[in-house]
Amino acid sequence: MAKALTKSQIAASVAEKSGITKKQAGEILEFIADLAYKNAKNSFTLPGLGKLVLVNRTLSKAAALGTEFAAAGNLVVCGYPELADLSGQFDLVINATSASLRGELPPVPANAFRGAALAYELAYGKGLTPFLQAARAAGVPNLADGVGMLVEQAAEAFTWWRGVRPQTAPLIAQMTVPLI
Ligand SMILES: NC(=O)c1ccc[n+]([C@@H]2O[C@H](COP(=O)([O-])OP(=O)(O)OC[C@H]3O[C@@H](n4cnc5c(N)ncnc54)[C@H](OP(=O)(O)O)[C@@H]3O)[C@@H](O)[C@H]2O)c1
Image 1: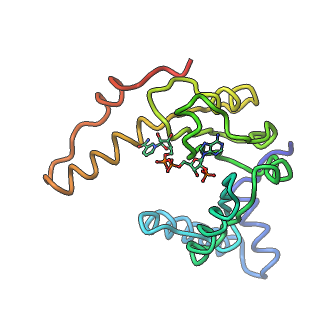
Image 2 (image 1 turned 120 degrees about the vertical axis):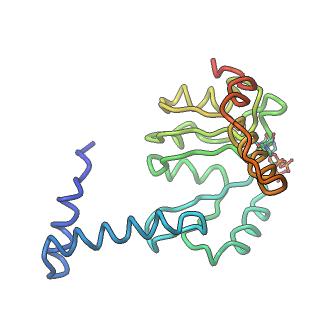
């Protein structure tokens, strides 16, 4: 794989293409990054950049979600077999099915994990689930389960009700089942 472009190289490309100076292109990139940070809590989508692929074994359910969230942009709906054609395009693969609760592997083609930086399993307390095992076997360098999500969303709800944010790190550490 070729080396990733540096910020300076990206700015130079934008400047050349659009007839502005490299300094102006750099300032625009910084402005977009700042805008993304500030608006992340309301969800921020840069049209044409970043894509969420939503899969369900019952395609009609995925299609219904795709229609409901179409306005959010950059959302693609497909079935499991089509994931094989998108191999190498995912940074993050999330298992939001309940398959792990029965020790099952959703039918994700193994090559769908190729190049992903993180595999995230929503189930928690199950250790290395079949999904995480498949991700590890495919070479995904970072694995996580849903214990952090469970505790952090509960802490958020507690904060809303009580105005006090609980310490989450010790609880996550206590509840974590090692992914080995
Ligand atoms: N970490 C957290 O805080 C947290 C919070 C909530 C839930 N969870 C976890 O998230 C997961 C989903 O929970 P949920 O409440 O959304 O479950 P759910 O409503 O029962 O939804 C299950 C989904 O999984 C799909 N599915 C089940 N078995 C499958 C299989 N073998 N292959 C492919 N797809 C399969 C189902 O597909 P069909 O539509 O085709 O039936 C359905 O879309 C569970 O593991 C749960 O423990 C974690």
